[in-house]
Length: 415
Image (spheres, rainbow, N blue to C red):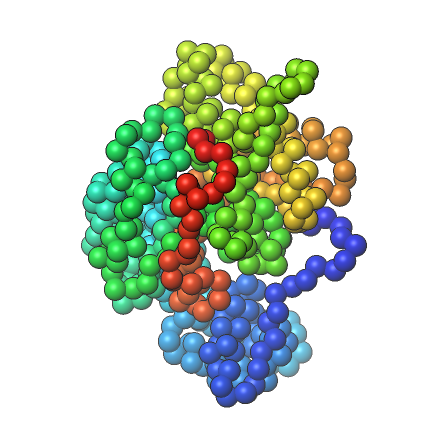
């Protein structure tokens, strides 16, 4: 992915440090962030990026080495003078557990400090209720512990990726008792599994964090993430930081109005989230007597089923292309990334149709790409929130985020 040309230089994350004694924790975070982003990296390069003195860098690096959060990887030869020692985050420096609950599945990951998945438990099941969620999550965490997939002494916390208004927004096949999620205290439930911090965020925000830390974030620090899951979501990253908005609602692309017919006025207008998502694809296929219930089923379709999926993707590509135009005009990111649980080859087909529409539009629009992390992005991003706290990367707060009840929002509901 290549960032598009801008008339103004791209602003980078401020890594300027302070050499004052009271700024020790701040400087420590800056050093860890530099190693996290640019490893392998030498002490001299860290000093150049942060503005800290060599003495300050040496003191912080020695402490981080003693704590096991970083490690000396190798010596860099071929330059003048003493070969520089390169530093990296120690994969075993900390561990995190990432959980992603959605309307059609539950995924739990054990993740090390550099984002490698050490263990995975997945349940492909529709409309899991809170009690079963707690039971299945507890079983997965016990399995990780028994199998030594995580070092309990170095567990940094549990991150949860969960859709907003999980028990409130109706969806196809939603059972009556699914409203149990509305008042369920998920933080307390997860806190029963560990004394470590619990981190909670919207599933699309979490997926965007995963892409930022472990995916295409290495190439672009400004992007909009479109998440195709049971329902539709979005996340926004600006200057290398997840942008939540005043109420944590930034990126809610499902509320975008779209025109669903080409007839004369008055034209039919609905919401993007009411026509585009996995559950709506399943419904479209059901109306044509093709029955699927999970993403894997889409890969086993016969020629007729694949043709129907292609027709649906072509139809949806018009709406996504319009969304990219609006995102480009309003937010102006480098790129729009498309990810989620829609199978990779179908995302690629969707992008091909979108590119055909965008080729006729403004060439200064953000480029659109398939996200590099696939179906586990939500769970991996949830784990990344905990890892970021342990490594003092400054991107998360363990406190419960504020979420306005759905009934207080003056917006249409029902997708």
